[in-house]
Image 1 (cartoon, rainbow, N blue to C red):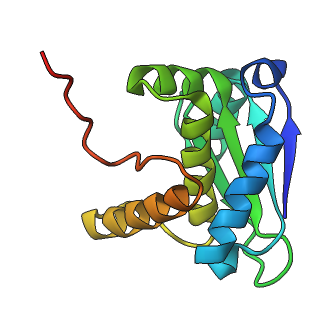
Image 2 (image 1 turned 90 degrees about the vertical axis):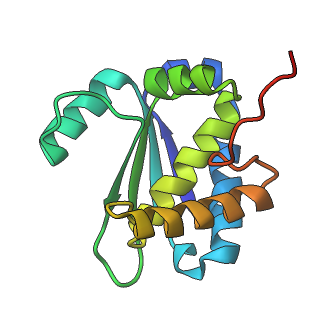
Length: 153
């Protein structure tokens, strides 16, 4: 259901099982969101390419972690998702989580955007975050929105 295109070799080094991870995301998401049981593509790219996409399609002059491009079609191909390796790896490090878990979160986030989920308002964000957390839980990935536990001192 999801074709993975590795445009930047850094993904191969950092996350060699990226295609399998994307397939797991699609499977788990399709169970909880049947509208996601359609063909989609995942582009694994670099910050420079992501910055270009962000500039061309969102008029934002910087890279971002994930972009989604819904096809707008009622049937068939659902759309494209893109992830940037440098931004994703940096964010995973800042959060103290694995790149695999962070990428899973961003892939699921991108998939939900393809079917109309958004986070422009607090209510939309809460709805989307709950759905992301449920899909990730089904994959055995921790809730990215759960408060971090403080270490005992």
